[in-house]
Length: 407
Image (cartoon, rainbow, N blue to C red; front, top):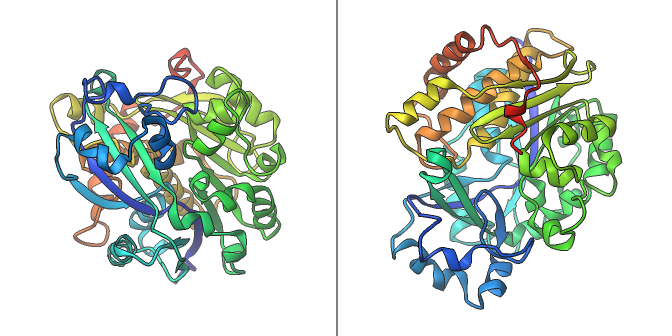
């Protein structure tokens, strides 16, 4: 039997409480939208800390929530977080080819017990998911499926809780003995985020493939509204990243640039091996240096037309977790390529699986899918992968185009 690929991920795991069909243009929500950068107001597609929103409004968000939601209860309570959701999807898609281990923490409370119970229903190894003295991290997700011409968007109000206390010292030697290490949404685990340079350096020195996927960094958005966000203690962090996956807003704020092409040039100059920038329902932008992935100077790939057509016909879930599952699909493809003996990976193939994985997430509520049987999710996504190959002519990437810039 072939050895399993070992994947260890550290970062955000939290309780998502999802409220669907919230109109971002409604009279109830408009007074609470942001006015200046980092002021603590709500912004579609972005995250704000509950404490900052409370200061912005002069009210307690939990007391205000019934006004914003019409007094409804959450439609769904689910596992959320850019790291854990990506790992769950990667494990579901990879099956016996991979062992996915999550490193993080929860509080000693009802939300912590919920997450432990839910995570035990997934194929992710949670023996390194530890308890800390504080409340479990959580996010209220307000979703407007009609936003952006029907493409949908969300607003996130986050409580970091116990994740403030999770530190680099909580990562053991097993973490750095992995084939792939994932630093996922670490802006919501501040000590890990601030220590990224040293952690990435140690992982690379140990021979790990390093992947960083980002989340909106409200802490640095507030502290540095006129400067780019840091990633660890210096830009040297990028030299130790094999694959950086970020969305348009995060790419611009991390690079301090005003367009995706300029951001790609920044990441390339700083030494990142490969970068993928997603842009909602628009083309993704990619490049790779030719070391860990086959060289792609700069290119774009479209979203899945089959997914778009189904959404136009009225099939509906929400966009929560699309980016996280995109990451998980890419990880699963890298696992598959490792299993085939590849040493230099095919970035476009990984993006195929990322694109259809992210697209499929639009068909259900919340980012985490609980399988009825092992392999169910892969079976459901495979037809979209085959359709996507036909759509793109076996996915020959296109020269980088203005459609991916999202100016």
